[in-house]
Length: 394
Image (tube, rainbow, N blue to C red; front, side, top):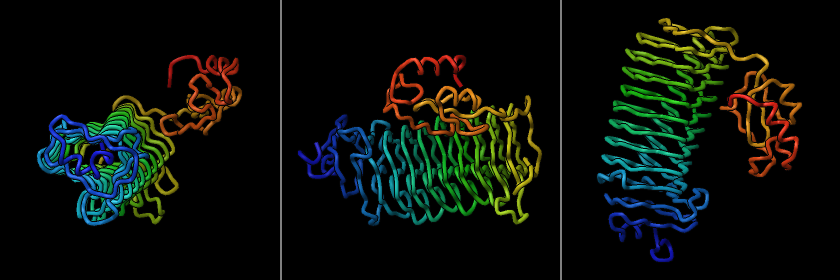
């Protein structure tokens, strides 16, 4: 137990044996730690990242290091990792290792080159329920930089990270990567790939949201040199490119398939200097397929213009965003319905064509699931609200 038994987290790691758990009590720990090839779990007692932080104090070096062949039995969970500063991997540095990171927040880290939040090379990583936010790289991969690597990222949030390329994630020369149920919001770059830059890596993306990311080209997504991807059931909304590809760009022999994805209010040539185009996708010597896409309100500066360069392959039909239907919040719950029905039921309507996937409902029910309309009471009005939304869940 740290600090009652061991004075620092690293002392606890040094004393641990295979299969042990180093338990860390709530507090702020000003140190850097190295797993030293040990198959152990380092976890916070509270299980809540906000209560237990490892703070690098902005001194030189990564806050957490895995570089000695750690395996999936090397687990970090329940911490905020912050204020690291390094050439690569200000928050977490991974080399030739396969650790698991879950239920963590990685924030306010710096990299003079790559991977301010996480840097991984020749690695297999697993991230689950991790928030990566406000990290800045002077090169690539503000949130995460991955080279010669593979793995999974699920149930995560990457927000407000910045770099020259790949604001949230930079994939380079890797194997297969799975992204699922993850939100990319407010990431930005001065170059390409506001959220993701994918070079020569195969990405499988399921159920993700790309919201309000910005770049010169590829506001949310940039594929380059066999940056291949299958992206399904995902939302691209309010992303911007000052040049081309408001939502996405695919160049140099990349193959990208968007299946049942929504493209809503993405903008290219956002600075309106007439030096850009393609609000949805710029396609150059690449193959882009859209399978039953939903497309609405995408602009080049202030006029429509969905594609530029090569033309996409359209499979099925292009669907339009439902007019008059929007996200309705009732407490912390959300349904998609028309404004009149929402307001009659005591809900809060978020506007035409808004989606529950990109709306945060903050009700007054204090976490009471049965208080559907969020008025602080469980009564007949909640039953009426439920009946009014009867049918398939959105």
